[in-house]
Every structure is written in C-alpha cells, then in structure tokens.
Amino acid sequence: MTCPTIAPQPAGTDLHLAAELRHELAAWAELGHPHETCGLLVGRAGEGRVEVVRVAQAKNLNRERASDRYELDPADFLAADRAARADGLEIVGFWHSHPDCPARPSTRDLEAAWEGYSYLIVGVTAAGETDFHSWRLYGDRFREEKVLPEQARPTAAALRFENPLKEERAS
Amino acid sequence: MSRATVRIPTPLRTFTGGAGEVPVEAATVGEVLRVLGESHAGLAERILDGEGRLRNFVNVFVNDRNVRVLEGLESAVPDGAVINIVPAVAGGKP
Image 1 (cartoon, rainbow over the protein chains, first blue to last red):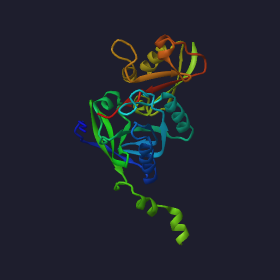
Image 2: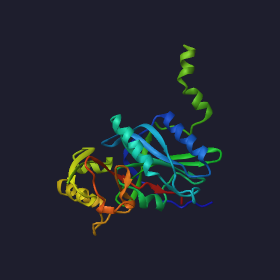
Image 3: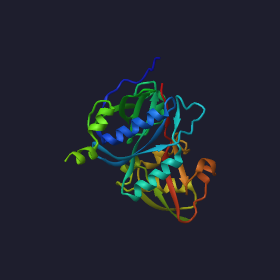
Image 4: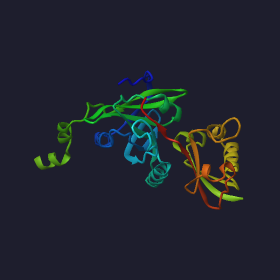
C-alpha cells in the first residue's frame, strides 16, 4: 500500500507525554483498528513546551469512511474543554490513528489543522502501534515536534518494567 | 443586549492576552464576534473569512448548540450564554 505524505520539518516545541499515556493511545488505536480512532490531549501549553496531563477518546462522526477519515465529535470537545477548565488545564491538541499507514499527516489533516495545537498521529496495524509522531502547523505546513521522553515502541516487556506496583512489592 | 461569556480556545489566547474567557454584551453571535474583534485585534480574522462568514473548520456553539444548525451569525445570544469557539477537528490517512 502506498501512503504519500508531506515531508517533515522540525517544530520549535517539545510534547511531553508520559509513557503510560502513550501506551493508552497505542492501545486505543489498536483496539479501533481497522477504523480511525481519535481524541483529545489535555494539559498545559507553554513557550516551546506542551505537557499532556491526560488523554481522552472522542467519537469519530465519519461512520461511512471510518477506515480512512475522522471527524471528531464537537460534543466531546466541549465536554473535555469543560473538564479541563475545571481542573485549570486546557485542550492542547488532538490525536488520531492512521490504520495501516505511517503516522505522517495527510493533505486532509493539513486542511483542517489550526496553528497552536499539537496533532499527534498513531500509525497502527492489527498487530499494534507501528509509529508515533506529533505535528504542529506553521503557516501552510506541518512541522514535527519532539515527543518526550523518547522511547522505543512499547512492548509487553516495557510495560512490565514500568509497573510501579512491581517495584513496591520488590522493596 | 445579553451578557455572555466567550470561551477562547488555547491557540486564540494569543489575541486575548492569555485570557481563556472574555465577557461580552451582544444580542447575536455576529455581534459577539464583532465586539470581540474590536477589543482584540486579529481575533475576528481567525474566525471569519474576508466576507464575514464563519471560516471552514471553525464552529461556534451557543450553550452547546452549533450555530450552523441554528441561524448562523444571526443566532440569538440568551442572557448568561456561554459561547464556545471550537475547531472542527478532522482528517484521515492519505
């Protein structure tokens, strides 16, 4: 399958996303495969730095072409925005999956994007996450932002290693 | 004339000095956006196109109802209304 996309350039921001949130997104993308799944990133946005505090799932309103299109339900945006404001947080961006395609933005992703949000994409197959990249719009093109902490694709072994309960039990 | 609160999405807070909410007095959604634009230079252009229509991929909600299914910019603003400016988030793989 060919998946033509836009060539990446670095953005001036870092997206801070804890490993457990990243794993949550990968799991949702995998469970939704072969359909596109989508949702919101909630946290704090600062100069050159976006911190994700929690992630949320949203309904994909595009049911007819759910395998290659998504349209995030604005009711989910409003609900997440209300909850975020109550906690002193804000919606800092969005995530969606690209089933059987790399996590690079398409021209359709570009058309709808706003400057000032992070657009995180999860490439996913039936076997799980393949790649994971975040993008920000500058003018008429996307640039890639660094997702921190940098890590390899999550594996069952990595999840076990990061399980804090296991360490507590050991000590 | 109604008193309403406009909730500003994060990317547009550069136009409001960082404020997430702006109080306005207006009778219609169009007036709300005009008043907002007068007090915050550059903000209206991000919401309306050159002909004064709502831009693609921008939605305005009055008390959680999309003005596109009400009366557009002519939609009435009830007293105490909460007005949300919401990005239309869409796309899909190549």
